[in-house]
Length: 244
Image 1 (cartoon, helix red, strand yellow):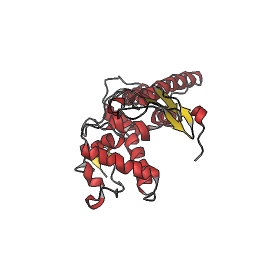
Image 2 (tube, rainbow, N blue to C red):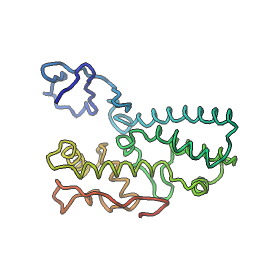
Image 3 (tube, one colour):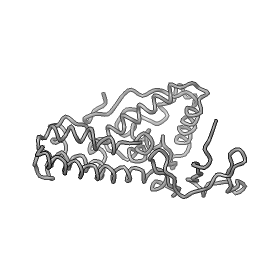
Image 4 (cartoon, rainbow, N blue to C red):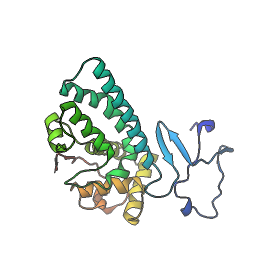
């Protein structure tokens, strides 16, 4: 494997769990890799703060800021072109704003999805930017029911789009060969979730979300025959308040 060490860095997410005998210096082919508090990889921000507010939690906020700037640009351009058709505006949101908001959600979204509620979904700014845009497109009050707005435009809540992409991400990894490093990492991640309920790892939020919306009954349901080394693919998705 070839690594560009000049563009590489080490981010230690759980420094308080680091074994005292482990050195604070990291090397690759005798080249020291610098340790940083945060690092941006392929546009996704990783922060070394411990707990649910660290790691990749801030990546979502960064995408929200970027998506907000895009919405301002869309409204400005639409005003210049005298474009006010609600369906056209909804289409523009889906093609210009949503991809920015969803970028990298396969990595950072489980951190948010783990708190989803089956009845109310996921409450937060990432959902508000979506419904607020659609309500403005229709010219209705912001107090109008979100469910009515989404149904009128035949759109899904933002968090269900994140979940769908996370499920596809999971299935792609599970379908890899057993000696694949990414698949091995996912298996260990799932095992960590099952052995430590306080863990803040990727599969903790992802599997908790599947439990909350009724796709599985327990996180261990994704393991084949309790082997701990073979994971199941997931086909059930939550949509419009039901599992399909």
